[in-house]
View 1 (cartoon, helix red, strand yellow):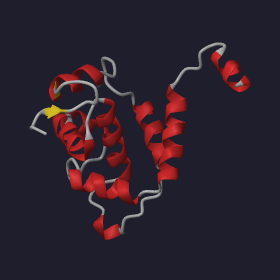
View 2: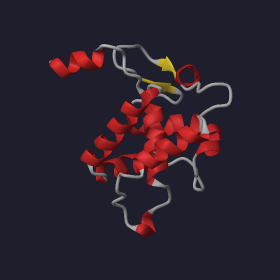
View 3: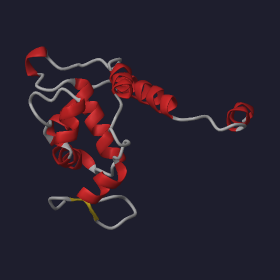
View 4: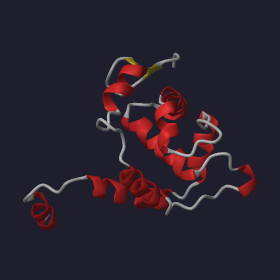
Length: 144
């Protein structure tokens, strides 16, 4: 992977900066404080399995950066790190990044350690919270 480019399945190489700016617009003022608190509280349910002395980054920050990166088209841990560095100013405004953006190795290690069922439950709770039910679909899904 070349610096500043990401690979998205089914597409040619995309300009990373363009992908980030196109996909991560959250309104004029950016992410609302209430939305961030909600996102943080949902992912606070994922237990942090790391030893206290090895924690340089909050687990919630790692998870939020990873999710935002993937939504914006990051491919793999290196792509997520590149995303984080490209959007560091914005991320620093909304997260507690005292030690900067985690490295790709940190993302990989942390996601290998967390309980996938806890992460899945939190992720589904978040997705259900941001999705708007479409009239009739909910009833149709119940009958299937």
